[in-house]
Amino acid sequence: MASRGNPADARQPAPRLYLMTPQVADPARARDAMAAALAGADVAAVLLRLAAADERSQINCAKALAPVVQDRGAALLLDGCPDIVARSGADGAHLTGVDAFQGALATLKPARIAGCGGLTTRHDAMVAAESGADYVMFGEPDERRHRPSFDAVVERVAWWAEVFEVPCVGYAGGMDEVAPLAAAGAEFVALGDWIFAHERGPATAVAEAMRQLAPAEIAG
Image (cartoon, rainbow, N blue to C red; front, side, top):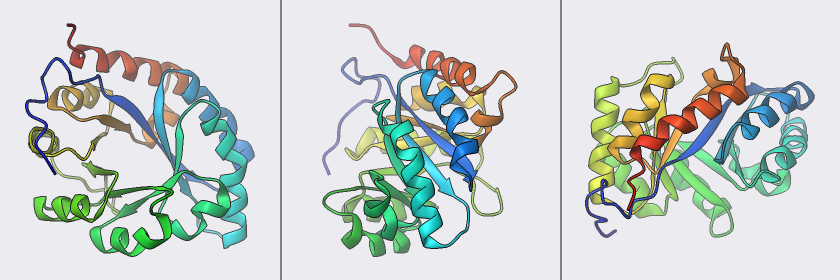
């Protein structure tokens, strides 16, 4: 992977948004909130977190929500579940950890997007990228809702942006984290499931997050 130089270079485009849903069991209940969030701004991708269920129920849930996302020009990614991506009409999957990512590659590639998170070390991130990740994610909570300090996340994003071509996603745990991640060089800023529970509603919240990206866009 070649260096792409200074992330503050005037040629660097503004980051795009990446939405992460709460766990979804009933697509009918989730549809309106997802549509509202997508109406708030230009969104690159939505990570659908399917609730635990039998495979057929998960496929049907993803199938029902895929048009809501894809008709707005965004990619629908499943959180895990690489084996049902094609049958559900999703565009790809996000895998947690290098082992899970590498195990899913044969299923997803070359037709589908394969992203990787849960990367606790620089070495893991580089292994994921060298294995064919379409993006790497930094800063998202683990299963116990723990995450690195935000300063550590910004440092990791800035390091990656300076050195590697593979895009990185920086996870924002709140609105105040969006602009710093964009300024650090993240190509995508992930808005956690908090965006769907925002007091002003998901459409207004996503629109505000989009405005937070603007300072990172350099005119010229």
